[in-house]
Length: 461
Image (tube, rainbow, N blue to C red; front, side):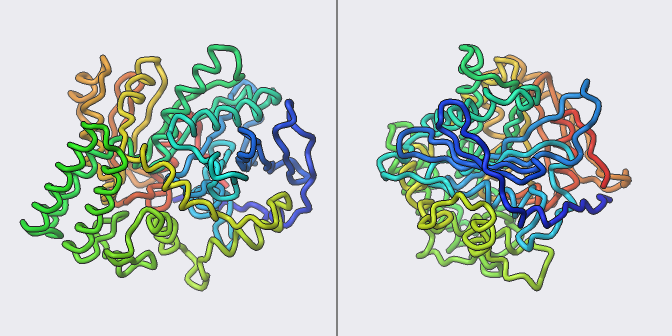
């Protein structure tokens, strides 16, 4: 069993110390007096400002022969806030009640949260024309941010960086990894890339939409009529993708989700064992849209909270207490106020696959870890397995031929928590009884995966 990790909550109300500008004058930062936290803005392009928040782990090893890792967490959406959701609702030191999280990933690594793309969370653009339209543009911005943070910091340069992503963040992760590698090879970025982890990620939208109908039919959430409607729309999406009609494919995806919700009587897209009507996230078919999807994404996590007396309003937390703590957020900026625009601006890239980028990373020798929650629907394991089988990578057949190894957690060596298998630099984890948010629903297994990824041991509290 995981021991409770106590981080002094007073850190959150410490008066920040304002740090010097990073080289180039593009980054502005602040932090706590003890140096355990730093945060700030990087102007990644004129009028485009990206917010970051760095936590130094109190469990850093004193043996300097061991390289202590840094995790860059990339949220999904697109338009969901890593600084808010990933930090306070999933893996950061404190939850949304500002209480210590016993399963914080600080036990294994330093943590870097980024509100990506610009317009997400506390990141913002002064002109809507500066919002990114493609995953590659987002990767370029993130690479600019990494240059500002790493090139002038020798301590960060010694720490291998692992890019860990969830949901749509997976598409950002693989494009960023390739962009960063290019910058490293060119001598423009001083960074050690340790690997990439893709957790329930939207790498191949086509494979996911084709998984929904058969999966829900087998689970009795769809009848033949619902299955046929679902499959028909999935086929339409496939044709639209093949002919390059990507915005049409995004619109059809939204229509397909409407059909799934109606035909299944509101199955939860983040856990197919649940009804979304029993979740604060509940939406009707007519309400579902790209902008509503962001609300669904965050609010689902509120139902997983351990403090029943909490109001669970992360928006109020971020715009209130956290904004006051950080002291550098523009007064007029509302947390996530541009998120809907971020989603809409990326509608032409939303349904594009990134399978080839994963294969390219594997071919370059980058460690790629894939993990998938058993009861996730939006990025169902069935769809994840389908895109993995499409990888144009020399080790694929050897990987597929391997048997899986059961996963256990902690001192319990009898309860199966999942399965895993690895071949060379590809690693896959099947996580039982977890939905879309594995770090929340199976935190012990998530730490096990992270330990395997970073070759670090979980620190005891």
